[in-house]
Length: 507
Image (cartoon, rainbow, N blue to C red):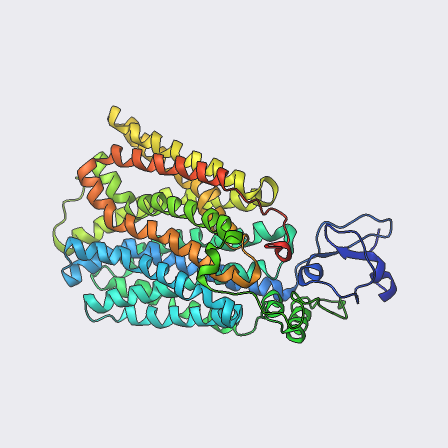
């Protein structure tokens, strides 16, 4: 067997994936036709997918790096928080503000900045968000007092919020439809890797610098690799989907040719079909469009499950050490006073959280493997149900004592982490960037992410209060209910996007 390589052979030995062969590559086509085009063997056997080009892999890796930094910073804050509190003499209210500052910044950034990718382009916002992240990261490492520290944490959240829709769009609009799910989620999985790394970095910094100011070094460690990622983002292509939606056809053709550069060069010529008739007004691209009848179902489907998922994800993720302490009793094995005791306890908490967080990565691997096979909707529904089962299992700890009690808590939280990352945590992110048409894809995904982070911010503020007033088991029962509601809403509003071409969304 061999592939055809001559120019004449190419005109008959390739086709848009999932479509019948029509004409030659010089025919006017849509952006995704070129990206999805796959070779055919001499005997007519269709190759399932064309190899990714160097530019496609560059875009993917730079987007994955952004998700890694998000997980790194958010979860590293859990390790840094006790040291921040001791250095600045923070009150319980101030602890809550610090826990919520980055999450609130993500909420605002996703809504206010994410939608700008529909106005100014995917690439400019992709570069801007990383520059903004580095700026506030450096300022945070040198924060002189509590107020400035809070502002800088919020600023980091702004940058991360912008990344939620933008990173998705730069990947999904540049890769084949057949592999979109696993590649988008493959990049998103670096958030879980970053979360585990953030906990590990916090622990290692404490080993080498066991002082109250060690939290500053934790954040400073990320600056140099972030600068490398920023430099790389200047050298990617702009989304041809977006350029075509703006009527900039020659630029779209040029960028698509750069995106698909391979050896031997194919296609040699690219001619794109415009999305709109000449002279007609361009479709509107603002927040209110999301709530018009044509887009309302997609808006609700992308937003409501994300909100319900974030209630549980951030509640369990951020406050796992607190829940364990409340459920199992305070650890009495460490009696060291002062700063030494604080740092020793912080290191033990980091170790325990890292053990449970491993299941985040395992769950994300499962999501990557299954999203393009099983489908987004089924994974999200069963993921929500699995989250409910894990939380319910953990709530049974009250009926036991000793090792059985500890085993139930850990088993329940680990099941929750696995099912959450296989299901709603991964699928809500994936679906939000797929269910909207190109001209509102950025603002739609940004709104969904922002609405989800409302749940995260509420959790950061209310979780400690509810934990002390309701008790661990009752709080877990509430999260069981929200998980079941998430499964129900997902099924009722379902929009399956597995294998669906982005060009066809909204048509």
